[in-house]
Image 1 (cartoon, helix red, strand yellow):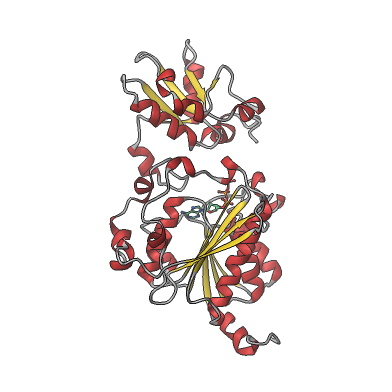
Image 2 (image 1 turned 180 degrees about the vertical axis):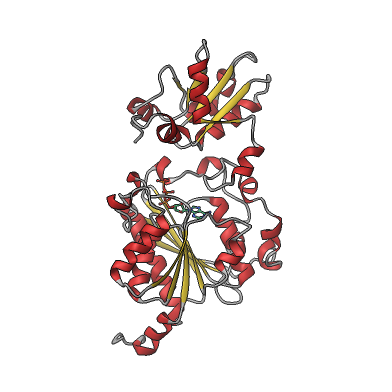
Length: 377
Ligand SMILES: Nc1ncnc2c1ncn2[C@@H]1O[C@H](COP(=O)(O)OP(=O)(O)OP(=O)(O)O)[C@@H](O)[C@H]1O
């Protein structure tokens, strides 16, 4: 309140404002922590996922005691420890095209703290339709990006910048590619800062894309963005893409874990649950052929007995080498069930009628439903 340019009116603005944070992971946790501490009047948290031990290296609102709890709940508990009077709406559901408008509608500003491309397009289209600013963060390995989309009447949206999704091979999750925890801390904190600036009316009206590289020299670079693109399908017709886009199909690649059971059922025949694979192993006299597409170093840490290791890159460079004869079924597995979908699709494209199935949820699912002693990392 004593800060020049903020004062009591500024603090009142913070108290009277509302924000919604989608994703209570590496970016969402630091953003939520500072937004809560700043005294934002109402904070919504949307995340369908539960806290896992591998999250604790960067998802700083969660702790050993909240393992297994919904992240949205765990984050809310931690924030209320800072300020018991905070109003926090816990929404332990996945944001989808069906619920986006109703879940996001009550809030002034939307923060994208998620980790997958379909949700980025979905959030962008929803924020254009709702005419709300979208404070978007991303982080992977040693790098991060920050941008405020849809600001004012002419600020560009995510689609203006990226009309087409990135190629599949350039996309991966933190658990697949790794992330230095503090990098998400830096970007998540900056998302909180940009949000507070918007509320206080101190935002930069000509938006830029901030690029951070922990190993870069200098580590921060900034690119000024143009205004809305005249050809942007979302800005020209707000709401239209939201009603007509299958975001997962549009982005290609593996289905994120929030995709509904209905969609997985649509892929029936191409996919198998870990439990079903286990039943098959137990009931067959001939052991099913299992291809593990993780990098060799990860395969060395743990693997299913008698599985073969063909790292994804190797498989994609020569898929014909690994297609089974039409008589043999092939089950493709990885750590979380993403790379195995890409590998299975590549093998199926080779034809020959081979029956190739990927294991939904990968070895993580195996350790949850089949063998709790399986040492998944
Ligand atoms: N459509 C969505 N609706 C709600 N939450 C989402 C959606 N997409 C992603 N998220 C959430 O965004 C968060 C992203 O954070 P982050 O990548 O740090 O976590 P993670 O997915 O647990 O990471 P890891 O890749 O290590 O498992 C996750 O908690 C994830 O559940």
